[in-house]
Image 1 (cartoon, rainbow, N blue to C red):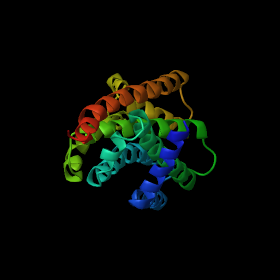
Image 2 (image 1 turned 90 degrees about the vertical axis):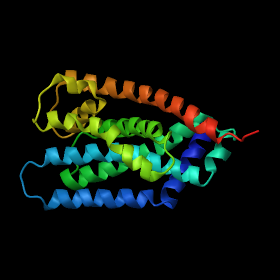
Image 3 (image 1 turned 180 degrees about the vertical axis):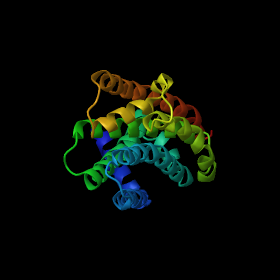
Length: 235
């Protein structure tokens, strides 16, 4: 556990050094500005959309950037022969980005809505969603060699994740969206600002945890197969 905490600290320094923190700050400020200049009495759906996009984008896009930076710097070659275990590497990256996404999500909520909302639902949904999409980011980045290639595959992963927004904005009304984990994210995010159905809250809470576990297993498999093995020193 101490090694994991140390690695998380180094990852926060990495995030700051490569201006990932700066980009996240700019995006969050932009969300706040947009939310506050748009006229309207009920802007909660827009706020939920901003909260939804934050952990999804931060988790997936920035995990790819971090891994590719380390590939270019040949850091991964040092990592795979170090005492650091693969699960520690994966969880450290995911936790550091998820903490960042959660903090920014809270700032956006307070700036856009005020102090009176359900912090538990918001934090739970932001953190777990960012964790799962960080792990999904590992899957996406495992087979690419450059950020340009990574950009190309981003829609393949994020477009399905955005489909539950159709239900949320009443464009569709299909139960099939409940198969997609981000449906659970949207339910919990909305519950942070509006009354919620207990059954939906139970589904969302359990499904997000399950999805974090599944996405981690997939990320570990891809990380070992496509990154660790290729980074091992050749005899």
